[in-house]
Image 1 (tube, rainbow, N blue to C red):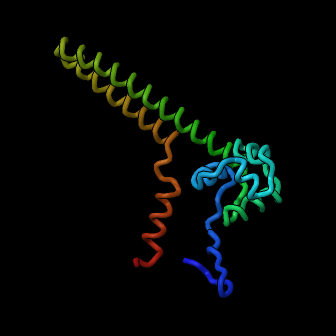
Image 2 (image 1 turned 90 degrees about the horizontal axis):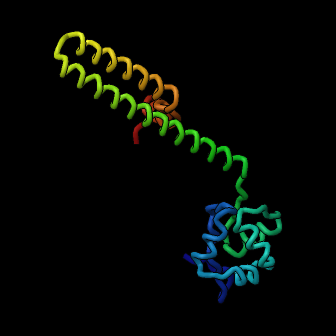
Image 3 (image 1 turned 120 degrees about the vertical axis):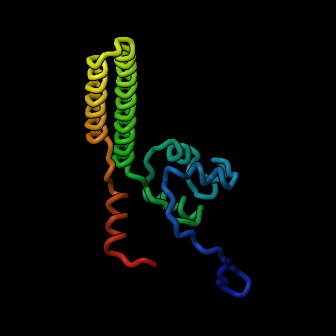
Amino acid sequence: MRIFASKNKYKEPMNTNPMNIRDVKKMRLERHWSQEQLADMSGLSIRTIQRIENGGNAGLESLKALAAVFDTTIKDSDKNVEIEQMRKEEAYIQNLKGFYKMLALAICSLVVFLIIAIVESDSEGWSLFFYMLITWGVFLGIYAINYFDFFGEAWKQKIIDKKFKKKE
């Protein structure tokens, strides 16, 4: 789609989706441009392009120049938000690993108690197995409830939409 500015000239419509400053390299590579070509088109130095692509800070004028070249708006990402997100992701992975380790330990111990119950084949062995099964179930349930967000924002939004918004 082209917008005609005069009889012989036209310009492409501006991309209204802002791209994150961290995506400059991706946008450059999609267009098959070298860093030198981007530097020439934007009026920035190659070193500035390299610094921005490697996660460095960019000044307002540099952002404006890149936005003009890519015909879009470019927003600078907040590094603190990115760092906080990475911490949340790492904590989630650590909790998941802890849960899997606890689950493996539970399965191994339950197998041992099951073997004891089968070999002994008396009610005391089976009752010990069932007590261990219930205990591990409680521990795993408590762990899962404490560390995993079963009723997070997505669930909350789904319930609100279902209850208060019209169905389309």
